[in-house]
Image (spheres, helix red, strand yellow):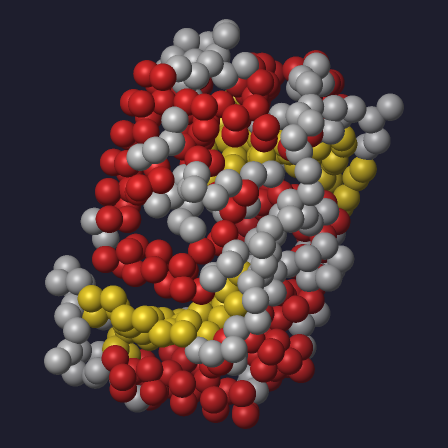
Length: 442
């Protein structure tokens, strides 16, 4: 028997939200996990398959292979001709796409609910029966190289971010770009793609997410029928990656490019990720990012740097935490035209130092928590967004319960929690500071 688990999707114990649609989960005998999120407001369904493999799982010297295979998954199978996968979906009035991150690769279709079984048929087909050839690999490799040209090599900000991330991670593969280093992409071949596909694209490394106008029992029956017969891979092992050594000195870099129009300063610190059963620190960092830089008008940095001192045209803070391993907490400042990067950095540092002394304003903290709660409520209206929330969470080791509990964990954050997290993370000796500029000053 396949065990069914039900979780009520509730937010912050709000009476208005007490009757949310249940989230159902089950696991097939071959190891494939599944989550069903009911949403009966429209006869539409989002069907997603997430694989627990991303760019951080690639072998050394093979950077970009996870993203490369994502492209190749739209080629032919034993049942579907090359190019027909997306054409079939489009012909039915749906849409499809895919994405690659450091920790996962995902494929999705949004379509009328009556076509859900066809989506499972097609996705199950390419999970184990993809057909690759020398020609298809050669063509798609050029497509990926062109994508790198467009999205990275032609954009100073993207190149700068790539260099900063490489400086941040001295040992962990998060320092390698998802799309891959150009010289390694150029060497990817049919054997690389085939080996990666055979190892990682299997039901015991996949998570099925179905959100929409569906019945969980019917979804389970379809999953058993189409995904159940697929053989698991014996290459799936625990995801153990090289970790970062303790950082003992601040790192700095400058990047200049004549195409830069808005110079800025940004700093990142290694920060804890969300962990199953222990999301409190990640929640505190989420609130901290909003307090420091969530709004140019009301945040600590925005009020001080943009409104009071008028030294910046923009500033902010950012943190995600949706990662398998430690990620980053960051701050940035885009200085006013007559302000140097050195002056901007000094002003930003002063604001951060003062915050570590003063702590958050009580009213501001409550406002931020109310805002986060509102955002969580609005997210319930986005079917594909809910599906992504569960897919991303499960691929990094969270449970269905962890994901459902996240709004309540955020709401429980206190001022002391925020300050503890801030003192632990905002350590200049454990940071990477970068200057992006038009030209290096003489």
